[in-house]
Amino acid sequence: MAPSAVSPELAHRVPVLANKKVEGSNNGNGVQASKQEGLTKDVESMLGNWSNFTFAPIRESQVSRAMTRRYFADLDAYAESDIVIIGAGSCGLSAAYTLGKLRPDLRIAIVEAGVSPGGGAWLGGQLFSAMVMRKPADAFLDEVGVPYEDEGHFVVVKHAALFTSTVLSKVLQMPNIKLFNATAVEDLITRRDAGTGDVRIAGVVTNWTLVSMHHDDQSCMDPNTINAPMIISTTGHDGPFGAFSVKRLVSMKQLEQLGGMRGLDMQTAEDAIVKNTREIVPGLVVGGMELSEVDGANRMGPTFGAMALSGVKAAEEVLKVFDL
Ligand code: 48N
Image (cartoon, rainbow, N blue to C red; front, side, top):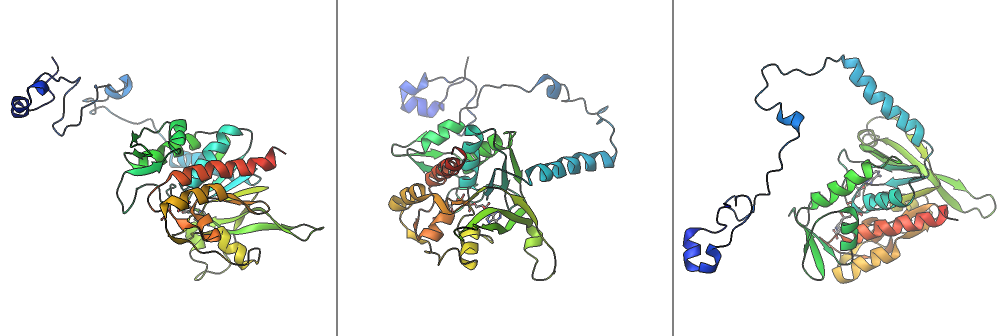
């Protein structure tokens, strides 16, 4: 019989609880232990049988070739991409997920400066773990399959890493998307229209992030490139490379100046970021918190619905070009 869910003294004080039984055991901190699902047969067979355990034989060069062959084949394939997403934070990953679902025929490269993608979405606010998303962003959580607690006008994902790891896992499994992490975009490829003289962004200039951070103390570490007709820049507003693309547009005189992110106002910030996610200059769509830097939008602080839905909108803006 399932053990009682409440202690004898509580059952004495609240008799109705005495008969409340739960499946599985209550592990004492009020958390109901899920039914034991068990391990797969192969893993279970390893338990207690380590004395004769051994891995299949290998030569180090096989590992090296397995990694390098695939990595350089990807660099070769994605040297010509349909779309490049700069920044694998919550906005960039949501854009990648949306594009991967809507257009599995397009080749999409995600370039992420950090070794670990995810940007600021591994934690909620002030390093707390729960992540808040205001409705209707719960629709994106349902789309991706992230569970949450419903609090009325907003929902709470029990750990921000649950959202980020779920979206990341879905994106990485999409055959038309490749993540190049530990790789920084350190410039933009430009083309000038012969007729109008307008500049169009036509790809990105990349380098290993650690190399990008040492151009001041090492010269001539030239970059690599990825050509692509459309770029989505979601490089955020902080960190060593924050707001990279919009700052570069100013320095190459394609933007007059940055609006500069305004103070925190959740009520207005999230609507503005989602609604104004757009193509800033031909070939470059900006979304997420990078947009607050260019538009002078308010920041929203520890609520992430605008990041997810700005990613969805950025995908839609880019597809306007491909669906022509
Ligand atoms: O998480 P972020 O910084 O950016 P978003 O826009 O995806 O999400 C922003 C969000 O985390 C917030 O800031 C929340 C909502 N707070 C708001 C507030 O008011 O404080 O991700 C950007 C990613 C990072 O992973 C960077 O490493 C990466 O972009 N990145 C780059 N990757 C490649 N090349 C670059 N030049 C580059 N610059 C940034």
